Picture 1 (spheres, helix red, strand yellow):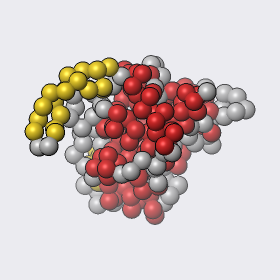
Picture 2 (tube, one colour; picture 1 turned 90 degrees about the vertical axis):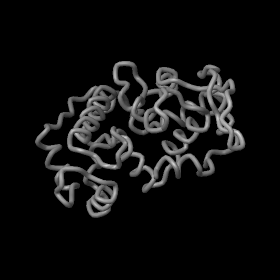
Picture 3 (spheres, one colour; picture 1 turned 180 degrees about the vertical axis):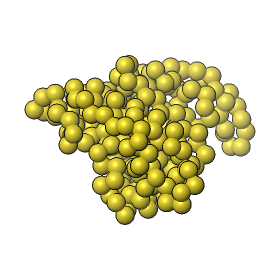
Picture 4 (tube, helix red, strand yellow; picture 1 turned 90 degrees about the horizontal axis):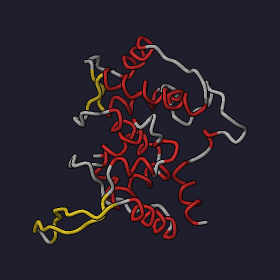
Length: 218
């Protein structure tokens, strides 16, 4: 559901920013032979694609080599055929969600990141794995020592698991967030309430994707 809406939505970037993102993709990608659908027929064409490592290199703070989890999960969500490659449309759709996504869209994307099996349900192990990685990544960025125990995460998971069946579907996740908007606030990668930034400019106030676009323009 999320991928279908994200891939078909018209980009909210300006024409110039969208063109810059396409140039960024072209510079980092490689041309490979792929099967594409043209007028109902599957044909082979040389297409510009980006692999996971190339994608990481374009994700700034989210793509650090020592903490690749978040960038890799974002890539995997959009790599719908699981062939380890994404095209320019997927790349610009990712950036559009990260920079311009509305609240429900960001919530749906966050759920997709947790749902590693892609079956529409999040188990506690998936929940624990995701947020453990997020907290570890953020702590390394701001040089903090934020920690959360498995027991604390289990308590939060049980709050979200409204029907108590051991897994969370998006409807439960959305309902829990609407009822308790602060429930997952402190897990937000851009939240600084429990961590001291490295400097006065505050990494947390920066959007690495928008900064990338502006940097490429200069």
